[in-house]
Image (cartoon, rainbow, N blue to C red):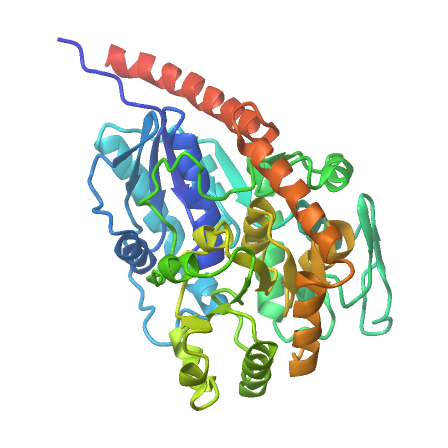
Amino acid sequence: MESEPPMPHVLMISFPGQGHVNPLLRLAKRIAAKGVLITFSTTSDTGHQIISSSDVVSADDGVPVGNGHLRFEFLNLNWDKDGQKHVLEESMLNLDTVGPAAFADLIRKQSLARRPVTYVVNNPFIPWAVDVATDMGIPCAVLWVQSCAVFSTYYHYHHGLSEFPTETNPDISVCLPGIPIMTPEEIPSFLLPTTFHKSLTKAILEQFRNIDKASRVFVNSFTELEPEAINSISKYAQLIPVGPLVEPEDNSGSNLRGDLFKPTDCLEWLDTQAPQSVIYISLGSIVTITKEEMVEMANGLTTNGRSFLWVVRSSCQELLPQGFLEKVKGKGLVVGWSPQDNVLNHSSIGCFLTHCGWNSVLETLTAGVPVIAYPQFGDQLPDAKFLVDIYKVGVRLKSPVQCTALHAAIEAVMDGTDANGIKENATKWKIAAKTAVAKGGSSDRNIEAFVDEVMKRAAGENDCFLQV
């Protein structure tokens, strides 16, 4: 009796950060649904957070997702991430040291289990995954988790293709093909000569050291959103849009979520609110604001009088004004974490005050929700510019936030003279985003083409498998 050949197998490995895990896991589900076995990997501590927040048991053969399966198997690392060791720069340093050998072991383990790896997909901050895969003769793709415009910005900076602010000329604006002119305040802050995160800048630019080894560079965006940026960078790098990477509407693999924090069930509370009446506030998993900013934001939400849902991570809730939670009871809800995609798609949400991380940008565009852009650092700065100036789906709130400015921003988005135009633009982008990932859409076709390549490679491997 002949052995049954193994299913085409893609091993996906993520940097252990919320903004990295989410899009890669969502891409994993989309690929798996088309008939592929996916093994999703990251560090074991982060992996256990995913399993815990998803209420999913990590079965060896995985869970069904569409026509395929998705399983988890995490890197066996000899490191300690307790306390403050989850700081980004330190995590990257540790992973650079112990990650490559552990990843090579994981690949070999798949072959021993008779599910050889056909393809590897990794995301930024772990460029060594490309080296390991190619050294083992396995093709590797990279998922860029920021915008195409930001990719182009870093690429031009890394290769010295354009002028950027320097210590001697700090006020220069950046002119890149296919991208609107950006002032120093609008480029990723890690590229400024004044940045305090030199090691992080180095780590970000390290992605471009070996990106030419990758057979494909996927990007979490869609052609209709960034056509000029994609076309202009194509002379240097062929970016393949596969986004927006949001939770699939068909709910395939719906229990498999990339949350590193247990979300609070706030949907029943939203059910009690009027349509388009609630202000949703979330600054992501990393951004931390000062106590003064927290007080100003709290006062602005209180005096505005509208209902609100505010995500304040448990580690930051001590910064809230004394008695605030009691004062807003019934009108506002403060949670430690939320199922953001479900929240943004709820009919009660009227606007989203966001730090403008790229995942949040795509989630709000796909949901058609107007924004109040409140960026803090990194790619959030150009993201905010695009949201307000190019996509025209919201207004900008200057940092540090002040109570009166927050009130004005809320009124401008909800009921101001430009509110109807903002809502119309938001609806337009919602339709475009959903069309891109729907069957036959621009991003879906790109994912289908990748699956076809994986299937062909696996068929060749299976021919050898059957001859053994």
